Image (cartoon, rainbow, N blue to C red; front, top):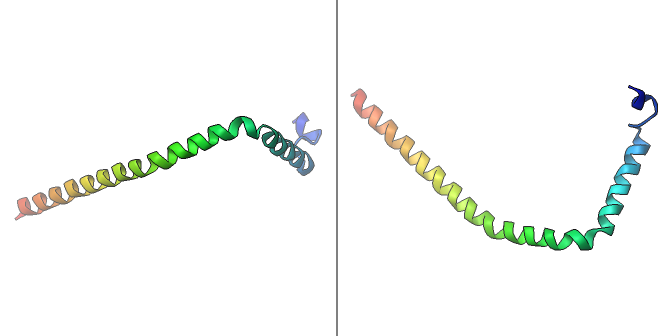
Length: 77
Protein backbone atom coordinates (compact mmCIF):
# COMPACT_ATOMS: atom_id res chain seq x y z
CA UNK A 1 0.00 0.00 0.00
CA UNK A 2 2.93 2.31 0.65
CA UNK A 3 3.95 2.22 -3.02
CA UNK A 4 0.52 3.53 -4.02
CA UNK A 5 0.87 6.42 -1.60
CA UNK A 6 4.21 7.39 -3.13
CA UNK A 7 2.63 7.61 -6.59
CA UNK A 8 4.27 4.54 -8.14
CA UNK A 9 1.35 4.01 -10.53
CA UNK A 10 0.72 7.52 -11.77
CA UNK A 11 0.26 8.16 -15.50
CA UNK A 12 3.45 10.21 -15.53
CA UNK A 13 5.54 7.37 -14.12
CA UNK A 14 3.93 4.87 -16.46
CA UNK A 15 4.75 7.10 -19.42
CA UNK A 16 8.31 7.56 -18.15
CA UNK A 17 8.83 3.79 -17.85
CA UNK A 18 7.33 3.19 -21.29
CA UNK A 19 9.49 5.86 -22.89
CA UNK A 20 12.59 4.41 -21.21
CA UNK A 21 11.75 0.91 -22.47
CA UNK A 22 11.20 2.12 -26.03
CA UNK A 23 14.45 4.11 -25.99
CA UNK A 24 16.39 1.15 -24.59
CA UNK A 25 15.01 -1.19 -27.23
CA UNK A 26 15.88 1.32 -29.95
CA UNK A 27 19.46 1.56 -28.71
CA UNK A 28 19.83 -2.24 -28.54
CA UNK A 29 18.23 -2.88 -31.96
CA UNK A 30 21.52 -3.94 -33.57
CA UNK A 31 21.78 -6.72 -30.99
CA UNK A 32 18.30 -8.24 -31.31
CA UNK A 33 17.25 -7.32 -34.86
CA UNK A 34 19.16 -10.15 -36.57
CA UNK A 35 17.56 -12.66 -34.19
CA UNK A 36 14.14 -11.17 -34.90
CA UNK A 37 14.73 -11.43 -38.65
CA UNK A 38 15.82 -15.07 -38.30
CA UNK A 39 12.79 -15.87 -36.15
CA UNK A 40 10.52 -14.17 -38.67
CA UNK A 41 12.03 -16.08 -41.60
CA UNK A 42 11.74 -19.35 -39.70
CA UNK A 43 8.11 -18.63 -38.81
CA UNK A 44 7.40 -17.75 -42.44
CA UNK A 45 8.72 -21.16 -43.52
CA UNK A 46 7.09 -23.17 -40.74
CA UNK A 47 3.64 -21.52 -40.62
CA UNK A 48 2.39 -22.90 -43.97
CA UNK A 49 3.57 -26.39 -43.05
CA UNK A 50 1.86 -26.24 -39.67
CA UNK A 51 -1.25 -24.83 -41.32
CA UNK A 52 -1.35 -27.75 -43.76
CA UNK A 53 -0.85 -30.28 -40.96
CA UNK A 54 -3.63 -28.67 -38.94
CA UNK A 55 -5.95 -28.67 -41.97
CA UNK A 56 -5.27 -32.37 -42.57
CA UNK A 57 -5.96 -33.15 -38.91
CA UNK A 58 -9.27 -31.29 -39.12
CA UNK A 59 -10.27 -33.08 -42.33
CA UNK A 60 -9.35 -36.46 -40.85
CA UNK A 61 -11.20 -35.72 -37.61
CA UNK A 62 -14.34 -34.55 -39.41
CA UNK A 63 -14.24 -37.59 -41.69
CA UNK A 64 -14.02 -39.97 -38.72
CA UNK A 65 -16.87 -38.11 -37.02
CA UNK A 66 -19.05 -38.32 -40.15
CA UNK A 67 -18.33 -42.02 -40.65
CA UNK A 68 -19.19 -42.70 -37.01
CA UNK A 69 -22.50 -40.82 -37.34
CA UNK A 70 -23.36 -42.79 -40.48
CA UNK A 71 -22.64 -46.07 -38.66
CA UNK A 72 -24.75 -44.96 -35.68
CA UNK A 73 -27.69 -44.07 -37.95
CA UNK A 74 -27.37 -47.38 -39.76
CA UNK A 75 -27.37 -49.28 -36.45
CA UNK A 76 -30.51 -47.42 -35.30
CA UNK A 77 -32.47 -48.77 -38.30
